[in-house]
Image 1 (cartoon, rainbow, N blue to C red):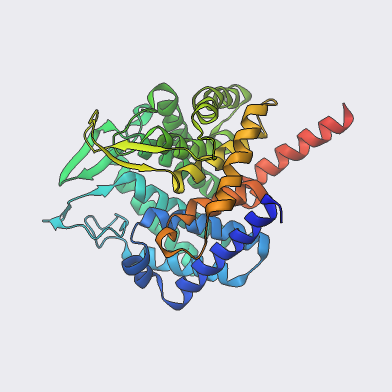
Image 2 (image 1 turned 90 degrees about the vertical axis):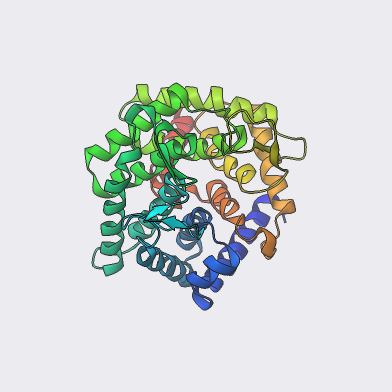
Length: 370
């Protein structure tokens, strides 16, 4: 069994385990006992739906719908009535949450839009998702800083709405890409491109404030795929994205990858500049998540043997160390799920997959002629 065959088998295992748990145990049990971080579920849902389109397993879609239905019902029970519940079970004080993050809930909203895109127009869940997401979008505008990016949300009971937070900015790019793809309203493309501009100008790419250089680039690589295929309105903008990805993400990934195939998630305590490390993981979702963007942009950038080798090491490491049934890594397999889809059947990844497939086909046709 070669690496790709192993990855496809693992993708099916992850999807089977996740969908079975969702349908048999229910999203509430999963959130409380298996994986309380709502943003991790959002990546599971994205991968699950890509696998649904590839494998055609009905339970995958039903599990995604179960999660979406529950997420909509949970909206407003932690803080503002429009806020999605991250599942962290933090305390509130007179309706003000102790901690509530724009970035994490943007990922939830993004995954909900993935589910909506898979449903027929007559499905009532689709309408409920749209209503919930539109209400949420209106609420988070107080943290939207335009071309400065997105702010953090609440931290330790304090509303942080003046300084940008790198992860919220990149997650907003993905969110507004999906909003534009589904609603076809120019305002969403405009907001999304403002966030792209913010990332290009000053995305805090090396920040260890609730992140790391790996963490930042993992999310940014995901966002830049959306920016390239959905938000960019002309070739100049697309070339700008390619340049930034090549200079900021690809060059870093090639030079910082460990020989075994992973990247170190080296972050410090919450205070900017703190010398005290709290995490130095050798495996996990950010190493695997970075592969998604690298895989797609490898098809768009000029021939790059170093990037090719980086990808082979990365996917080879993923295939060799990941154990889909490992409960200790159950939540983290979400990023692996999407990264595998990016390698094997990217055309099934919403919202940009079909456009990627069209681009690849045109390039192959061009090469065949010339």
